[in-house]
Structure formats: structure tokens, C-alpha cells
Length: 590
Image: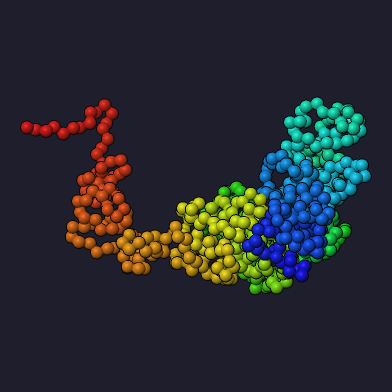
């Protein structure tokens, strides 16, 4: 019964309750461990029977399952947007700590579960009469580095001020820090901290400083040289294999991750990738444990992610985009044949080497087909998640094709098909809104490419390409100048000027009446007719304008198009007057 109730939460119903906001809030509360599945089932039942503007969060608080502060934190995390270089102040009703945690999640530094754990620790400390900043707690637990805290404060335009007398610390805005402030405990004047210090630790950070105990360690014969990336549960380092004298990447699970499920997921990524030996998939060499760390040794890619390239260029040409999508589709098709769905296809997980090779990586959310459970937590990146993922349905290869289609759309237009403000709006857009065709943002894009993309991001999986091989076949047709199997968008069709029938952009003759559609073809002309150079329609000799397309002809030859703003074609333009010469005017003789 509880599983049935949770299934109702995963699948959007036509009733008003629970709303999409309730659905997202309930999922976050469940995945964060704030509420059990039985209590969630109970609260959903109460919500469905309640009249008025009550929400699922209100029911949680009313039943005593969470506090008001926890509800505010939940709402703050449920409403998180894209990472931004600068951020506005914390919204009304959200604590500063919750806003700091939200920003850390946006930047990909921590997970929602880690933020909630630290918020709970902060509350417990406050009950004991101790006041601690959330950033300090997250550093102590190993979720953040001091440099991460410093960067997050800069994004909020805030600084840390300390009391030189009692050592109390305060986070204040840059503007407020310019004023004289006093400590709330001993009233001594506050000073801007020149370095961040974590209480009970010797770890310090001066501006520009870095501290990392992993550097220099050797994992499976590979010595770590430098940190190159960091996520919510793992850090990626560049290393060199001492025996092979070859650069490799070392992915190390954070020591703060002690949950067996998280460790299993980390190892599962390594095993999933190790099974997939393909030239377009980043190769995994080894997985193991050493120095108390769980690590993956894998291929080092010297190049850039597709996200970095798009950030620099804005958008990519259609020919180059097709090449990249084709290579990614081959990698995904290989994974699908092996029974694995990637579930997180996006520009950040597509790598372009310095030699132009395309590689797909980060199988951390990968799942074997048939192993999905209806009660599993939603996983993925909101901008690229297919509708079935938002509904809580089982993913398959067509889900990856949808995410690849969103990536394809972004590559050729420089923008995403859905750009809602927050996950709630994005969910509604992915489920219900029809995106504009790519040609509406990039008119120079071949209409066949636009048709392929629109089929890839169809709402229903049955309307998409059913396999990666089918997608590859249609891309080959488009590259060869042939008609794709995908249907064209209505605005990309051409109309017959005689019967009004809508035809394919590549059609030469109307499919209804057989009349020519204005392409580069020859028509049967009478002795007193010539062919319009623009629309190829038949025009009577001596006419000044084509009745089909409105093109104006030269006043002298009556066949070549007139230069805009004049009555003559390029060949018959009168010569411009020389400097100091009076323009010639014909004199009428009597």
C-alpha cells in the first residue's frame, strides 16, 4: 500500500493535490532521510483529504515530523536554480545557512543529503549553546575545502569578520563590512578575517592558498600530481603511472561518504565503465581502496568538455555538431546493447580531446535496464532530464536519446530548449511545453537537422528514435542531402503557391498537384516568357515585376533583377558623375 502511494507521488496525477511543488519537496525530504516512506504515505493521504491551500510541507510540520526550520531548508533546496557567478540575497523565509547550502549544491560541491546532515549538526550545536557557521561544519566533515567556502562567500558578496577579543566569527555583506561593527558577545570592534580557520583543526587558508593531502600519494602505481575537478561525492586528480610513464585520471571518493549505498554507487560506476570497452567511452583501468580512500583509475583526457567549448563559442556549426552527436550516439548505442542506461547525458559529461576525439564519461548515475524501481529517487540534471524521469518511470535507451537531443539543440542554437527558473518550472516545461524548433533560433540551420533534433526530444518515448542505430541512420541521410525519417516542423515546410499544400523543404514538386515549388529546375516557357531568377516562375517579357515573388527587373533589359533603390541591374547601372562634373542631362531638340 505504501509503495502504491509513493507511485502516485512519482506519477503526476490530474488532481490538484499533491502539486508539482509537493512532489519535489516530498522526494527531497525522503532522499534526505527527514521522513520515512510510511510517514510520507500518511501525509499524502491527509493532503488529498484536506480542503484549502495546505501543502505537503505544512502537513509534515503539523504532524511533528519536521520543524519549521527544516521546512524552510527543504523549500530552499527545492527551489534552487542554475549556478551563477553572483547571487542575490537569501529569499524571504530562507535562513542564511540554508541559502549557503543551496549555493554549495548549485556549484556541484556537495549533495542535498550532505547539506541536511550539516544543518542538523548546526541545530544540535545551537541547542547546546554553541554557534557555528554552516561552512565551518561542512569543512570539518570533509564535504568542503576552505577554498570552496571562500569562493561561495565571494559569490554572495560576503566576508567573514572576527572578534580579536573572544574569537567569535560573523558572516556579513561587503557593504556592511565597511562600517564599524561590534561583537554581539563582548562588544569589541570586529575585524575582517585575513584567513579562514576551522575550529579544532590546524587547517588554514590564506588568500590563494591550497591544502590537499592526496597530492603525492600513489594509487595502483599512479602518483597523484594535481586536482582537476570536484563534485558532490568525489574529486578527480591528474596523475602519472610510474611504470607506464603515462598520464591517468584518479577519481577518489570523499572520506565523508560513509553511506554503503553511496560507496556501492561509486564502485558501480567503475564496473559499468569497465564493461564498456569502446573508443568513444572513457576507459576504466582499476578500482580499489588504499590509504582509507576508495578510488577509480581511468583514462586521462587532455582536452575540454563540450560545456567548456559551448561557453567559449556560444554555439557550434551544424556539421561539427553532427559529428559530435554521431560519436556520442555510437557510445550510447554500445552501452544500451550492454543493458546500461547512462541517465546523465549532458555537455559536462562529453569530452573532446585535443585530437578531436569524442568521449563519453561519468557513468555515476548509470543503471542496468530492468533494475529500476518505482520508488527510486529521481536522478539526473534538470535541464536534460526526459519527461519519463520526471514522472518516475523506468528509463531506457530512448531516455538517453532525449538528453542527447537537448544537448544537440544547445549545440546548434546556443541555448537550451527549456530554460525555466528552478526545477519546478523545468519539470512543467519538459512534461507539457513544446519547444520552438531549432531553426527559429538559427535560421541557417539545415531543416533536416532541426527535424532530427525535434524527434529526439519528443515528449513520448515511442515518438523518438527507438534506438541509437536509428538515430545514426537518420543523421547519415541528412549529411547525404536526403530526406530524414523525422517529420519536419510546420514552420519549416514550403507551401505550393497554386494549391496551398504543405510540402517538404527538399521537395521540388507539390505532392498534391505536381506543380513546381520554386527550386532550381527548368520550366516550360512560351516564346514571350522568361524564368524569374529568384523563384523560377514564368514571367512575361517586358514585365517590370514578378507576380509570384515581387522581384523588380531592370528598366533596360527587363530580365535581370534591379539593384535595390534603383531601376537598373548591376550591368546597366549609369556611371557615377566624376568630381567637379555636372551630371549629363539629355537636351530635347525642337
